[in-house]
Length: 481
Image (tube, rainbow, N blue to C red; front, side):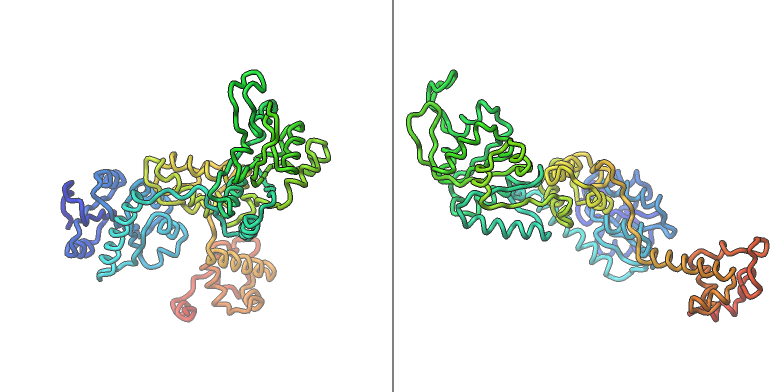
């Protein structure tokens, strides 16, 4: 039926995972030029995959496939970089666990019986896709770190504002929470402007001690103070002709605000210890997570400086309101750090995506990128799961199918109708607008047959009910659609 595994044979090998492999299917694969390796247990699957000769796998789901069996299959196939094809029986793909297994772990699936060339063609496509993916993982350059990613309405509004600001020379103020990407927005303004070929200089006003900030911004001459052994060009002068990004401007010391205001008014600086003004042409972009209106009211920030900086204003949307952008950003982070992990990560499982959408992301985009990078390193399978993400306080819930929702609604309606009519099937059927035979069929199909009271129950059914007796064969044929 199948041949022994040959480590030297590295092409056109398929791993067939099945408790009882179909002989006709194996013969068909062998005739098509495939070397078939059969595995029954997870240990056998792991040993075969570790030899590195298998690119395509064929997994046949058991007839009575349950969640435990699917979990065992996932554990043995998810760590591998094999393109898996599932063989399912008619109706199996309608069950949510089977459907999620196929979507998360399989390249495609076929419905049995499948003895024509569909299976071999599909396996050829899977083998070709594996080769393309393997080549791409080596040749693909990392994604650009300055990309503006987002399709939600808030990001579209931000992009339109970026285009408008980039065509103007007025100072731009960027407001937003920490981690939303304010520096990325400032760099995008610079890159889209006429100053793109000149310098982009960034300085974090909160990260430099107040005693040194003025020197960092404006520079100093030799001997201006103790330790000033040579002339130093300040950040403003270094950005001449380009863009200066003042991050966390809300934390700038009050004594430095007056000097910065003078530069914005006159366009000149004077180095510490210098003897004359220096004309500097530079575009100012500033940002902060601080509410400057409250800071002005508290006396921590100058109102005149605020109006000089906030000629044009952009607001960075927090990640929690960006909807589908969460998945886009997670995919971007995965592409950026895919090579950090020991295994080749193929993507995110459905529970991981649900967990990301259910989390509030207080750290915004920065937190999301760091979370995905950590998951790439810690993941033990080829798909990042909710457990790998490790998001606090997130409960992942499995989605409900339309059939499950419809069944629950029917069950509730039938149960309430029976209660209202003292378990008289004729009266309940009239209210529901169906025949008594249809109501009886519903009692069986939606799981209320065993819940209906019997003659031993205090709430005995009336005489017109058929629930206390088994239907005749003739009745079943009449009820069949």
